[in-house]
Length: 423
Image 1: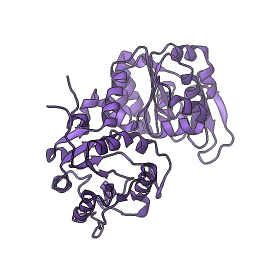
Image 2: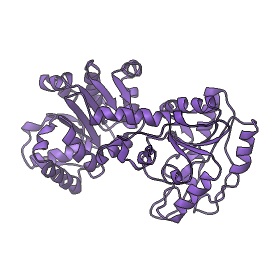
Image 3: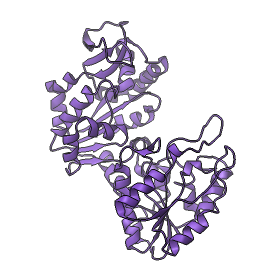
Image 4: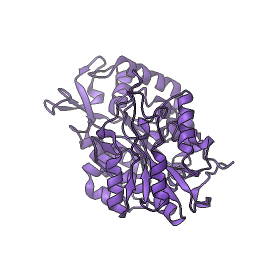
């Protein structure tokens, strides 16, 4: 049986601990939601308790242009807002090494880390926080520059702790570095992996809800999820593409590629396709910029070939239907990685669904990070506040990470996680 090499077993006294977090919460230089940072504080405090010297790192945004290979360094993608938050929250003093890039190829000179870590060892600062990892040349690379960066980072530390469950891609700072340092899973990483077990070995029935803007980004996880779920609810463009395929509808903004993907998904799912729960009412809107000239349609009343404008939500009345309510109320586990509507314009479908799920008091309720949690907090703040202290709820810090784990068939199939398995 796979087991993570956890940090509780590590000797950290007097050692420089290089910790990879997923603190990717900065947009245009400001923090919108501190949830991901707060979730990692127990790991940081444990390192202090064990006498470790924390050197932290995270990625912020997407400064790397895959087409040009250029890395853009800007204040909007800086970690400074994170450092200021931690300083205020924990009453500590942090230091960001003054690393500079030459041109657009990213930071290659890591020598400023040495004096920064010296300040840490001598007690003049409480922690060091590296610049945005995606500013470093090699972080997202697939060549020797990734190995080179991993070696350089490792040379400044004694142990490595990965607490970045949400950063599931195999980059230099999440995966490559384990070849050069003793590596351990942080407390959040272990907690997230443990809770994933409720998806792979759920209390049944398992109701899964997934939405997205493109079918091709979700078809892998969906193909795996439909096998383990008892019921699958779709939303967003994914559901629109499904409706176009099954009922011959023409919905504005749904690409032919999405419809082809939906057709392939249904065909490959075979008998499991019967698990898809159809939401009978959809909301059509004149455009995507403004909420105007919108109307609710019953899918069964639409004839094949019907042309619709933008379908930007599933109607709230779906979740008042007796059959759908019964399906949710009888669930043993509910997994949600979904915002059902076009977020800014049509929140009603999502609000109604989250409200229904909250009434499923006997079910284990698992919500996958990102927009899903942010919208829950924004749309239903009172329910969300109570849910944060409700043991039947669990909020993952990374939505994409969960879908990757589902596609791999196990949390241990994720490369950064597999690298932390106790040998």
